Length: 428
Image 1 (cartoon, rainbow, N blue to C red):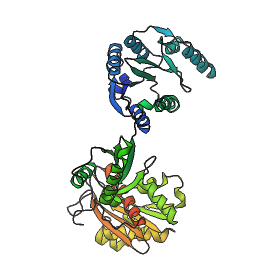
Image 2 (cartoon, helix red, strand yellow; image 1 turned 120 degrees about the horizontal axis):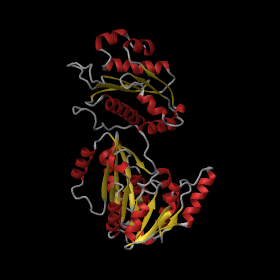
Image 3 (cartoon, helix red, strand yellow; image 1 turned 30 degrees about the vertical axis):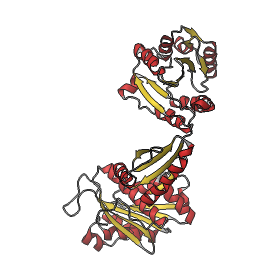
Image 4 (cartoon, one colour; image 1 turned 90 degrees about the vertical axis):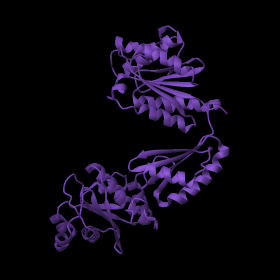
């Protein structure tokens, strides 16, 4: 069974200058991947008629499918139709279906059909229309050099509908273009991309060629993806996954079946399953842990309140942290963070707690407590656990990492993990 070779051509000066960040190619690639088709080449070009027409000819000579994105608008720098006409040696003509679409689009909006808009109906003579039920510009397709070309709008919402409703179903229906791809995605926390790769190399020196491995960092999480292109190789992949799960144990957050979940969402899900409530007591993170929890719809069933106690006086006032503890050990200490956790549990009807106190920087450190120092406390009314970290990072990243580690530690408590996280200091 042949696997389609798909190329992308993205157009626009804004893409070349960085004024617009390309998210469309990721959308196209993900949609194609879902039906077993990989993107083998991606080219981005400025709005230059000669460059575009030449690149279209070149790409179609080495692909089964070429998806061109952008350049369908009404302005003079929208050149896709002209470039495709030159490449395919076809005249440009006013397409009746495209014209009817424009007229209907303007009528619905009580808008005048301008000469500029009419440009969107001037297309290569023999092209087929791809409907756009949202925007003014239709898509269109035609074959060239035994390659099927699809021209799509640059507006992401319009592109998505066109892919969902027309292009992807059409490609999926052509069995000669589909592969027997099988993908497993594992989401991890607490092991970096390079360390993960070295662990896999050491554990699997003879990695099977039938299984492709990929890494994707989406800080603070890592996605490990295992892919086979033939169904007969799925048992090999499944055996690898079993061994990887033993190797990485509780660093694996979940096996992704749809969209990846955040650490906060997983924590709340576990709390809801166990009918437990959680509270937070934060200093250096300034409420970021509570913010992550409340981003999740339905969080209120497990999270009712949290504390942001930035000054020592407020730690004493709201969390009953003894002034003697603060005077003797300081705000960034095991004793203080443990007292914060205990105070939060006493003041809120909760079963679990996370507390953090640290030095986010860039100033405020000392020889004994350098910038990046943080104590995290987590636990329940029976036992509060504590751990020190020194995270050398800018202020924002420091807060994000502290938040993620705190959530991961409470997740590990909820699943009764007995494994020490790899991100713990070496002496552990």
